[in-house]
Length: 72
Image (cartoon, rainbow, N blue to C red; front, side, top):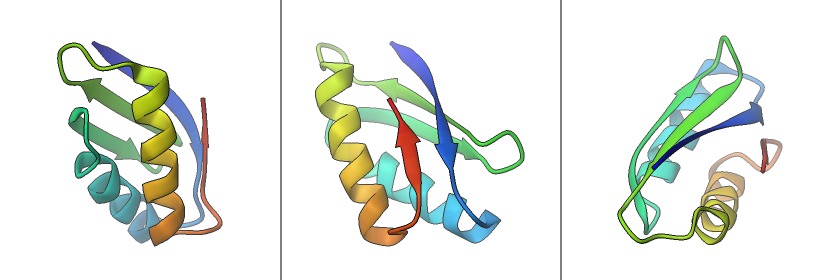
């Protein structure tokens, strides 16, 4: 399952850090962040609850960029 989320991030480097953090989160098969459109595309592994996984993605992104926001 793939979903797109609106994000708030200040710079392209921070967007790359958020993308890396999202990809390393348990339950995420793949993730891409587009700084220009301020969107995060997340592909979830089979059988994962997107709400639970995205809460973990949000926490991981906050660790690398405290000012960022992922709107669920």
